[in-house]
Image (cartoon, rainbow, N blue to C red):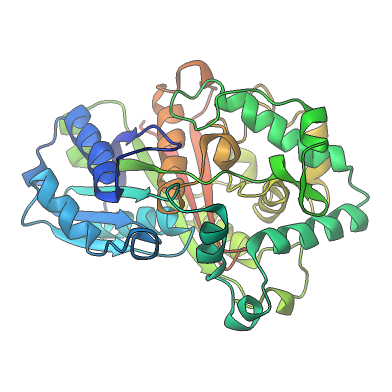
Length: 385
């Protein structure tokens, strides 16, 4: 099996995109990615669209067919990839499979979502539909799961409330240097800790925003990549896993089994371990999730991630720069695009195109979480040798 390379990446501006609808956003990222790589749309064999809710938000389905038409990529095979808020990571997995299997020599993945035209209440309700029907019937939302888990974590491991706030401080600071981030401003710890309570103990600044946006990655065999560029990234490990759909059935609410298992699979495939990762993008839809993923992926022992954050371990100049893009917290979270955008950041770090966010990195990891850990995809990339 030939190694799978990523030869280009692109990302639209994240935030409120007035007048642009889902296919417009997808086309914006897709066109930029193809043009930067010097690949014609009709050279595509496969085109995947990571998208969770175009039907629910816009009444728009068939977005993958509309996109390949707008790009002029016919007769490429198209497929929409939906794995809730892990759709982007699932798209990376699908695109990798299409190349690794030999079914395609050129695959474009575009992830996107259009959300901001709906009210916060409507958006929360749409996203809450990923929960189990019994939980949904009782009004359970993902923010409520986050609040309950955060309270349990803080009390069980004697963690400081400030450590959660420092996740948001760090990611906002990183977002300042990301020209595509929704929020390009720093936020101090006092502001975070005094913001309105959403799901105790979590406050407004512990949550990511509602976002429009799109991101794209272009995949091909490594032998083909060398025909286009000397600087590319290789997908050295990727795996997906699921956890219980009913969150309260988990043996330990502070352990996300999907993170643990997908991380194990990605490490095994790549031959790397936690100590080999130079930069990571984690799914910080809520600040507590950064702790749970750090521990599930082996970057910290159980109950110890908060101390590493306090010590600056995850800062851009720390041992493991985490969410250098600004994360979902600052960059934004357009559901289907988020996992692809994580891949964009890792790609740019590995090929030296991250600008003022650049860190020294040869191996990077991204972890994309669906629901409250219901499904997870972990991807490991390395710089071309």
